[in-house]
Amino acid sequence: MLAPGVAAAEGTSGPALDYAVTCQGCHRADGTGTPGTVPALAGSVGRFLRVPGGRKFLVRVPGVAQAPLDDAALAAVLNWMLERFGRDDVPKGVVPYAAAEVGRLRRRPLTDVEGARRQLLEAIERAKEAAAPER
Ligand code: HEC
Image 1 (cartoon, rainbow, N blue to C red):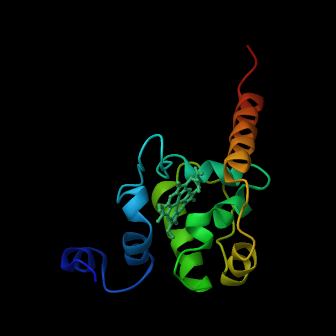
Image 2 (cartoon, rainbow, N blue to C red):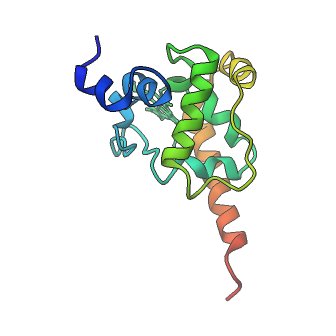
């Protein structure tokens, strides 16, 4: 059951409530996660859309792919999450997640989450270095 405070604060349905019920137990209401165990979404998650493979990764991580939400609700939570926690990092012109896309990707959850995450973070670092002005 929902705590009444949660429903009151977030409305009775929609992605904010779905996040509160399905994701926030691990990632926290403010998206800061738990250092060392659950990665922060705030100030971090938008960067994945800057590198090839990142868009898929965000759907295929187990906590997302296996969430007890239908494809449309899950797509809405992802779009809400990027707006709420990734706004400064999401590149311009990114197309929101669609239900069909999410449905396709979540059927193939990642097997090597750590490895995929490490490779993407390295690519993000390389992209940042490439964008830095010459010294
Ligand atoms: C049981 C705890 C738990 C729940 C519930 C959970 N996650 Fe996660 N999430 C994690 C962990 C741990 C990782 C790191 C990758 C891994 O080991 O699966 C992660 C990774 C992620 C990532 C990739 C970010 C990164 O830096 O690697 C995203 C995006 C994400 N979660 C979003 C969500 C959303 C959205 C929900 C709700 C639909 C959710 N998670 C539910 C624990 C959780």
